[in-house]
Image 1 (cartoon, one colour):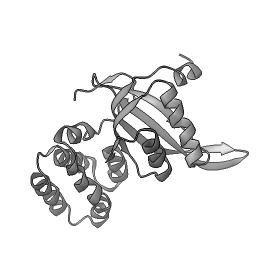
Image 2 (cartoon, helix red, strand yellow):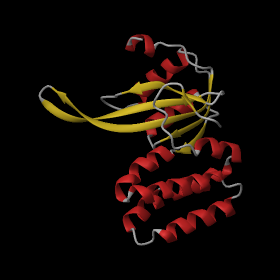
Image 3 (spheres, helix red, strand yellow):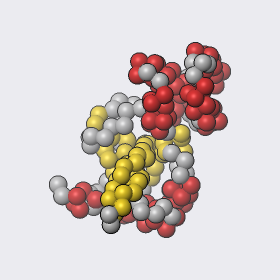
Length: 201
């Protein structure tokens, strides 16, 4: 499939969750090396399958830029979004809410994964992600806080890691205003970049 064909491919009417990944790369523009943000939208459909539904490289981020791209998603058939797991991007968040006013925003565990993996050994990092996922899946906030506080106690000597965890603490706790089912869905940390990757919800 050509890139242009893929960009115009018809999409699902409803996505249970859209995971938005922000990554950075370096590009050469007129003999100058510049840092370029790349946004990847991964949709989780009602059957539990993921697919990449959008790939964006904005030269300048504005409300106008994202309005054009989100309207393009709608024109490809996306009528409803239940949840969006995203990084804190004020333009993107505003535009998605304008087009899908009932959407639920959840903090992205994929972003949390990417922001913490460089500060701790891989084995311990897997433990942290497992415990944060358990926190999301807890049936009550009391149960979740026990897991969360035990995690902070376990890594209390790693001040930098605790600072990063603390940055997300308010968003993590606010997750408990949503249903248990919603928290289970968004606890997924598999970025599912291969189109059609299976995932059971």
